[in-house]
Amino acid sequence: MREPIIQTDRLDLCVPSMDDLDALASMWSDPETMKYIGAGGAWEREKVRERIERARETFHDHSMCFWTVIERETNTIIGQGGLVPINFNDPETELGYRLGRDHWGNGYATEIARATAAYGFERLRLDRLVAVCYEENLGSRRVLRKSGFRELGESDVYYSVRTILHECTPYDLAR
Image (cartoon, rainbow, N blue to C red):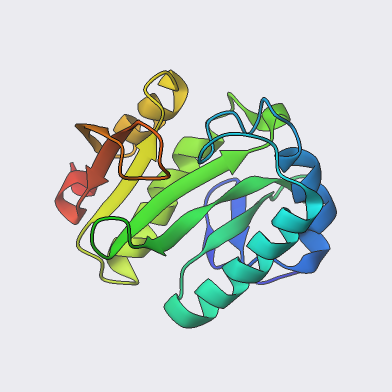
């Protein structure tokens, strides 16, 4: 079993490995699951492989990535979530999460977002995180609000689609 980078009451967040490829490719090939991810659309297996490799490199270089999320009780991969450095406007750090459809509605996204934000502020000493979601993705907007993020309004800078930009600071998380 891998050593988790972050643990919550129910989840282990681990650096992705190629052992995760089948589970993640199965989730990310579902168009409904991927409807609100980036520009939308299912991912082919090769893209998932590339994303795992990129996550491993990002962790090596920055101590952050989109970790594989494992439900501890069942040892089941349920999705990914974490932090990634981005450079759309200026260098920023984006918080994100994506869960397989079978794992929606269990509070996992909020658990991932809160734990990941805390990691970013406490361990990495970041002073600001951003997150984006589609306006109609009301579930994700609720998750971000419950996790301490504030809505800043519409943006078309991220992923070449219109999104709602959110931000969180250590102060927001402490509220």
